[in-house]
Image (cartoon, rainbow, N blue to C red; front, side, top):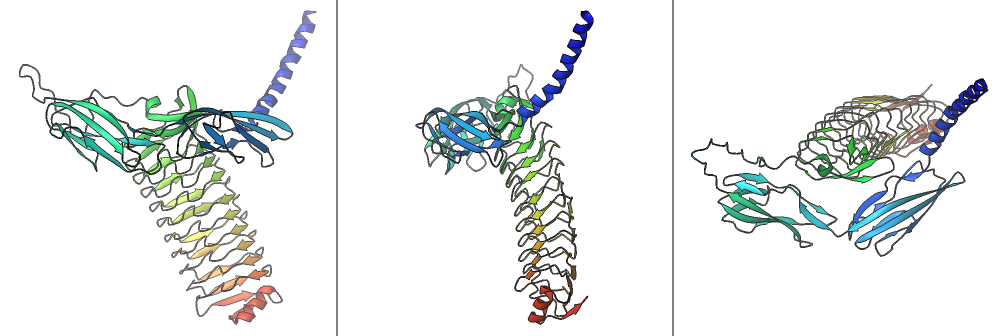
Length: 498
């Protein structure tokens, strides 16, 4: 009897081990909203609901528990109406199964806040304030003090200078909405006690000793999602270095929301934990002092303009697991010298590296199928490119204005090169198009030194002016009895057959 029980128990455990992973896999692929909580502001921006694991064929419906607080459109756009809390219910039908997610939306009135208040300073001290507006679209902010004999403030630098002992109120105000935040500071005498050991005077702009660094939960704002915590804002925008924690409020940090670090002009270095999988639109845009950043290998999505105009960025490695890149991602990163596009990227979006004037080396891994409009427009240092066999299409103006581009290596598999793709590549001397190409737009206009082009028989259509303003000695090698041959003859361009 005992032996039978043991056999039964072993079989039971084996079945449990087999069945359990299947159940886990099933749960992991269930569609759900990316956030379960969201804060919006009256008169502020709307919020577009996003999903994990949502199939294109899925049917999604939305409803609000209180339309007087927040409404939701049939496209999943949540609009704040009035202060309060509403629950947005999202119903999903996918693969003949029904799922439901709920997002608790808290709508607040817009406000302004001094984010690094101080209670006490000594005569002679200086202190630089930081402040932020919440939920306001158009703003015009200013600073003032209640008693200019006690302290003065430089409106441009936000720096307060303590002049004499007393109390003074410091006000940060948005003149458009008339919203303000006022704090009271006590200014104490700087005279030392002759019987006591002198205390060194704080250096200019040094924060008072009694004001500690903000704890992580106070430095970052965040929302809770099914996958963990998503960082929604940072309260001290004057930081030069940011170390993003693995956890906030006990929740694992998995994402950085849109625009969190945008325009932090003093930010130089950023560390991210290996738990991050998602970086939102404009997350680090216009961080003009950012020199380098290590993106964890766990990241699969980087949004539109994420690093746009990071003008000091010299080095960055995209993770191998990356599958989604937004448009304009590195536009205007004038010091970025090299980049490798990982194999998981099938479509390189428009303007991805536009105006990256120091970009010398680009490596495309197999898997890339499309290069978007103006992806490398104006990359004047780019000298050569070698395309992968997986590439099917090069969109308009993709490499226009790449004035140093002298060598292009096309691979078999490319089907279409659209208008102006290589326009103005003035150092390009010869081009051999692949035997799979079917469409050639006006791609090489303005290539002043282009003297040799080989067009395969596969080409079915050539755009008007494909070789306008090229070298006067341009010769085109073309297969007889092909459309390309007829085009060349009609245009009276010098040609030879092969």
